[in-house]
Image (cartoon, rainbow, N blue to C red; front, side, top):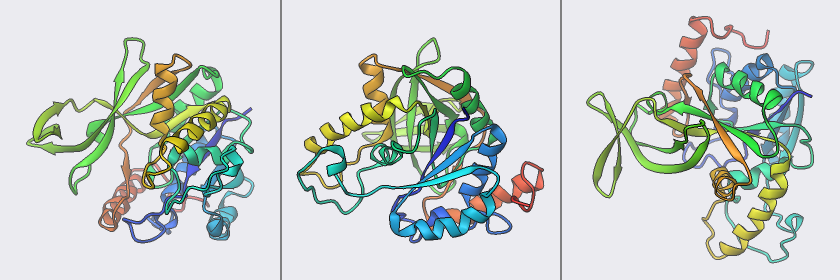
Length: 299
């Protein structure tokens, strides 16, 4: 059974100012998602599931169905505020959804095979998809999951400091913990993170998480249990978010599962602000010019 690609595309895009998930960046208006799905199909994924807001389903279908029909199976699931589906009767007011780990629960009724999770607005590169497919078809078990580890030096922004989840990896290549460094930047040919006003160096090859995770469906039951606990503990914190690294941290520390950190030397790029758009467009243009992608992706 081919693995499934689960795409997190329900974000508010408040900093970007519009629906960046379906904004055009390629030479013919291709979205970043287009390039991820193109790589996923070539790597061997069999289905793509979009996590979106229900009100955007017609937009997504109009954009992606004509391109993907006959190429890969598609499905759409919705991240919403309904807590009763998780056995939570209390109403908890939120302006935004509960975060990325809550989002993946939206796929629990349609995904029955090993799967990976990615962000809609991040470019990951073919190497990452191929390595994840290989893992999901030969190594994954209900107690052995994976995360793609990017070299931090290939994930930095030209527009200022970034936040990165730095992976601590044991001798066997498994994840020990992810430490969020909220201010990482290049300086004088080196890379630093800042904490309490002090600078600390990081090597160029330091592995970081860019939210590219591999699981089996067994993770849904565990995540649902963790989410119920999180919602109860944070019902008075309307901005608290239930992120995927919290799942990883819980499974690792409780010895329920390991996470293999799969290295890639692909360059990552993504879009957070409107100012990022020209850089992303130029990066994709270079990938087209060097033959990584055809000029018309879906011909």
